[in-house]
Length: 150
Image 1 (cartoon, rainbow, N blue to C red):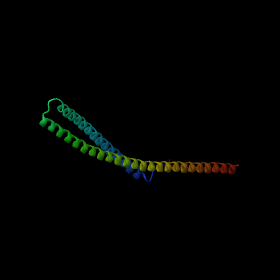
Image 2: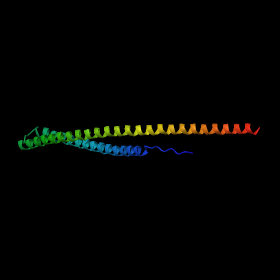
Image 3: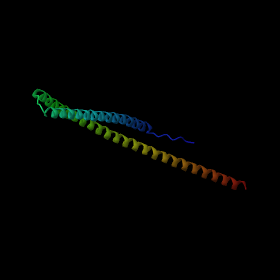
Image 4: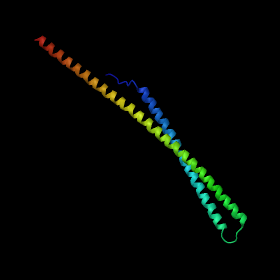
């Protein structure tokens, strides 16, 4: 029996490897995004704590130096939170880029797989036609041999 050999198998293999790499890149980008989100959350919690401390110092007896220091802490945390938001947005953009790349690579691999399936179906069809032709020839030969023998 004939063996099916897909002539573009090496291209399909490359597409599969590219998809694996794109999945890893996406995974790393997602991990980075989640880490940046977590850091942002932690900074926001700290900022809220500094704001509460500042409000607490504003009540009762005022120590201007402590109040001013607490206000500076709050402002510094606001700046840190804004910077972290920028980092989160950068990580989010990288994640989106990785997602789009993965989507493209997956589509390319699927196209190659469909081409392979189509080639395999054509191979099976050709094999079936060859088998049918062989059977017809065998039947014709046997029939003709039988007529000559009489």
